Structure formats: C-alpha cells, structure tokens
Image 1 (cartoon, rainbow, N blue to C red):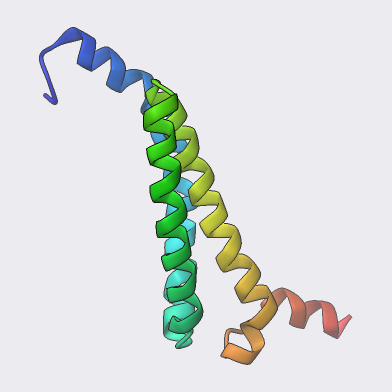
Image 2 (image 1 turned 180 degrees about the horizontal axis):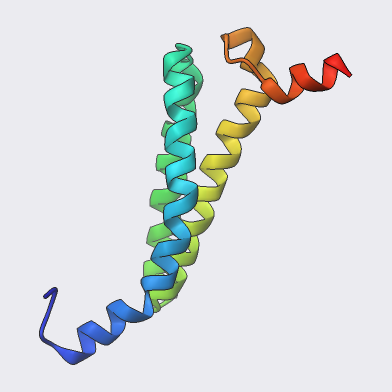
Length: 112
C-alpha cells in the first residue's frame, strides 16, 4: 500500500480522476514526439521544451505561493499536457510533409 494513513489514502483517491485525465494527452504527445524525433525535428522541439520548462517553473511557483490546493496543480498539469499535444499536432500538420511524415488524411482528401 502507498500509505496506511486514511487521510493520505483519501487524498490520493480524490486525485485518481485527474491523473487519468492527464495520462491520455501524455501518451498521445509521446507518440507524436517519437514521430518528430524520427523526422529529425529536434531543433523546434528543443525550443519548445526550453520555453515550456521556464513557463512551467513560474506557474508552479505561482500556484505554490497563491493556491493551497492539489487539484489546481492537477489542472495545470492537465492543461500543460494538452498544450504539448496541441503543439506537436500543429507541427505535424504544418510541417509534416516537409519532415517526411505522411499525412494520410490530407492524401485521401486530395484524391476526392
């Protein structure tokens, strides 16, 4: 067991849904990162991760100082995962062909 303290167990159970909501975009973003790494798009990815690291650090510091709730931190993490997923989706949509990533939906639409 994680802990025998009933307060800790209850707090962990309260956060289970939030954790589940963060897993999906995290997995999808990881798959898209693999596509971009395979396409040798590390320069753009490095810019994104440096920017995200600074922004995330300041956001967590702000939340620590102003909000005393674990659920707010989960919401911030949830949003950061969807921002990451969106960044990779936009990059693949915008530069996918140029990077050698076939966009199957675009090819199907062009045939019709």
